[in-house]
Amino acid sequence: MAAESPLLFEKAHILCYRTFDIAEEINLERARRAVSEDTRRLKLSRENGQYLQLPNPPLAYELGRRALALRDGPVTVDATARLFDHGAASIILRVPVVPGTSLEQLTRVADELYDSQALEDLALDWVEGVRRTIAPAVQGAHLWDQNESYTVIFAESIRGNPTAEELLEKADLARLLLGENGETPLSRRESEAVTQVRFSYTVKDLVVIDWNSAFVYEPSGSGDIPDLLEIANAQLLEFRYFDEKLDEHIARIHDEVQAKRHGWTRLFRSPYRTLTRQTLGTLVDLNEFIERVDNSLKIIGDFYLAKVYEAAVRRMRIPAWQGSVTRKQQLLAQTYGLLKGDVDIDRSHTLEAVIVLLIVLEIFFAFFNVFAH
Image (cartoon, rainbow, N blue to C red):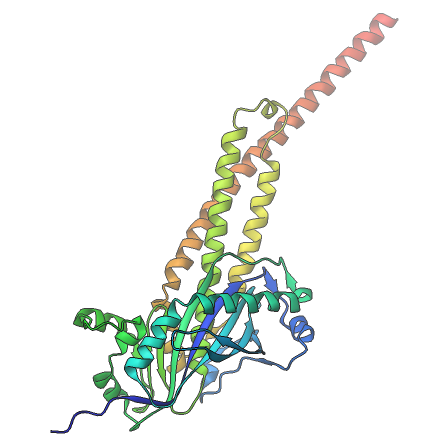
């Protein structure tokens, strides 16, 4: 009996995303004018893509090529920058896959790329350049010390043109997505857990989504699904960023309240006036942020791309981070109410003191006039 032929990738590449929070807001039209290279707005190309709307599509432009050091030798990667109006900037590194690469070889390369420090350094260097280029177009410029990474193994052609079902049967996609290239097989339960979120529009295409990587087999070459995964990844980054900022602000409120609770200045004015204004500013900024992130992509139907996107959002645990931000937003709003109440009481006391002082002065001048005569 003839041995089963191995899977060989004839046309494929690996998309490595590194997404950074670089500003509170990016004016995409100003950024377009600041970038001298050709720019393009994201547009979904798949038929019936109108079920997903991009009110303010992210802006992309090419960064060029550089060498990336890998164990088997350096490879030349193409880089693209994509800017989101809610303040995120994504660096996309396109790593070529040599035609004829086997699944085992691809798994080994993917494993290296998942945790490559050289790739991390390259992306960081590029995002610094992006920040300088679009400086006139940003508000609240910064660079958060954390980023979101995501990897998409994108295959356009596999030898023998297997169907989606054949791929799932023949290829150990769980090991590929996890970067597990050891000899010991994964347990059946783990393999099923990694590959449980999968879709096929036709019998000839396949999408398998995990929390930090995905496998996309798309003979048409359409990049819609990697684009949707990138949007979801950028949303995850923003919720993580604001979750940390809320933690910092809540901790600062606690520290200031503890420090000023017994101060003698409380007899004359509330020590929380500045803190109250800062808290209100944070709440306003947060409301604007949530609005921009929610508007980055709108679902108006239940077509294939919409289902893939919603599944990716759940797989990346975005609802959990969004829920955390919402809870802390409510806590901050309650805290603002308490602080404002303290300030209002202080103003009431001040007004009462002024009234008492005026009465005392009026009595004093009345007695003064009587004794003067």
